[in-house]
Length: 253
Figure 1 (tube, one colour):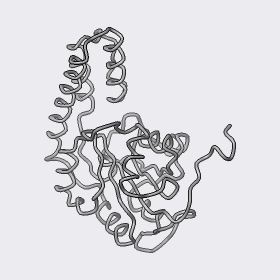
Figure 2 (tube, one colour):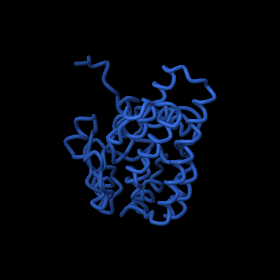
Figure 3 (tube, helix red, strand yellow):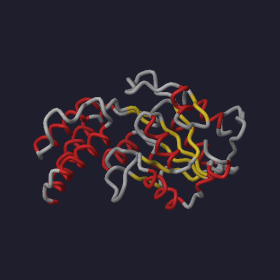
């Protein structure tokens, strides 16, 4: 067990909230099984041993494992770059196929509007591509709320690397101890807790087939400070629900 000084230090009031995109603010029902299969196919074409990668791992771990094997086998840097470019291109194309069916998650616009009106700085941290993220925000009319956005396409580390969140918070000029991250996946919890940023879990929308299945207990075990079943309840946690109810420990800026 860590010492008291090693534990994250959270301060009130909150100044900024970083949201995940897909599943949290919008519902696009990406074909993640197909995405994983495509990445594995690309990796094997570039030299990864067939059967070493599995569709049961998250995409970022499939990619990490592929990179490690390719580097260990001594492939030239140019081949690694071609692998990176090709798998990104395939994922980008599959993501864009989901854009026509992408919709706002119930309560997203109301919650973001109230947070903006209260003066919170809002950011978006997503593993989606820049093009998909921006077009999904435009399609769902959520784009006016996000001056700060970091996607898979941005230079440098991507979520769940804590550095991706730290870079975004520096851009937002929000101190770590006054920041909050919200997401519907355990990768979001991993990213926030490794960055020592407060995290609120959002249970997946009933229409989503979460993989892995995310529960309140799993979020709490992963370091969440609170877990909301939907965006309306999240608003109550943050003190911006219509009834003005404020959950313990939550405050507006």
